[in-house]
Length: 170
Image (tube, rainbow, N blue to C red; front, side, top):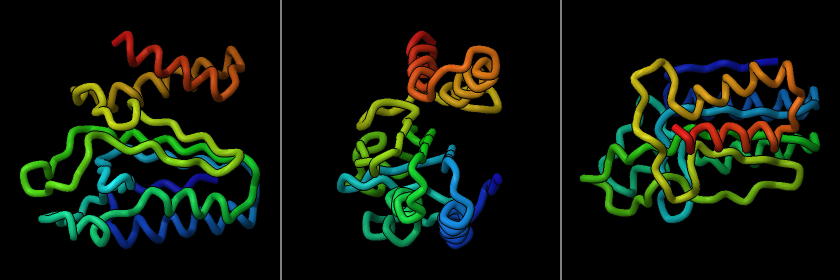
């Protein structure tokens, strides 16, 4: 079952993640969380930035964004065995002139047992420049690999490795 949310605010994002965790716990199966948008790293913690975020200083980050660990906590609580988190949120920091506590890209996250976390780029790095296409470079190759997956039956690790290879070639 898919929960699709686009261009939502902080409160709606938190509610969607909570609903996702509840649904995963009740129905089981494989959990997949995909986020494409702005993401920040502050003091080693990753935050997903909703459309209504108003960040003027480092103190605002915790209250104006969603801690990505919240997603992992919901998945871990579901105790469903297999979870995949895909974060296409490693673009350059839009707040760099105002917020000094931010790191580059996203930080490496500790994944619970049975979980895979895929990033659009290596931790601490910024992804390849914004695409003029509908999707980012990473998502473009992820979608392509998923379409090909129907023909080749790759493991999730092989699929994500293929995506990384395609992005690096580009």
